[in-house]
Image (tube, rainbow, N blue to C red; front, top):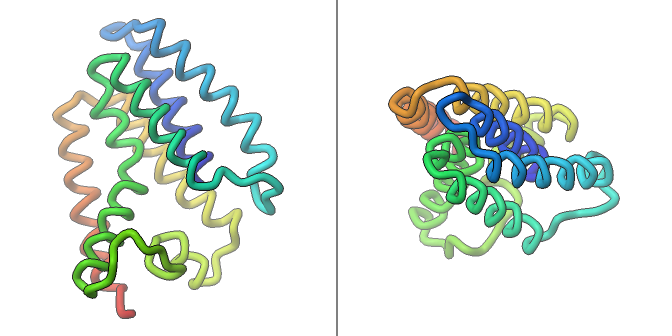
Length: 171
């Protein structure tokens, strides 16, 4: 899941780098290198995975995407909108754990969105398709929309996600 989201984020970053207002070859090159590496890794990481990222690998993805966004100035809004789904999900889980008087850094297997989708009977490929499609739509908005629209979409996504998650969170 993290690999697919990072793949889509790299595509969006490459797309923003090609826009006439941006034309940033450094960011384009970094995004394409990351895209190639992630594409090759995804072959082995797709369900049923034979190779896993692990914690260090997912941290590396975050650092890599952050570095690409920072080096190519003005792309932070794009990265935030493309990564809205995992960021809002993580924020919700942290808030829920703190509200439940649990340590927010201890993991569980039922709070995150992908756990909820799995419990609803959706297959691993189905979960990838749903999150990939949502991330791709957000990625398109991140590339095509001006910054003020990105901020509005991000705020709207946060509100919709939190309202639906709080209504469905029973346990």
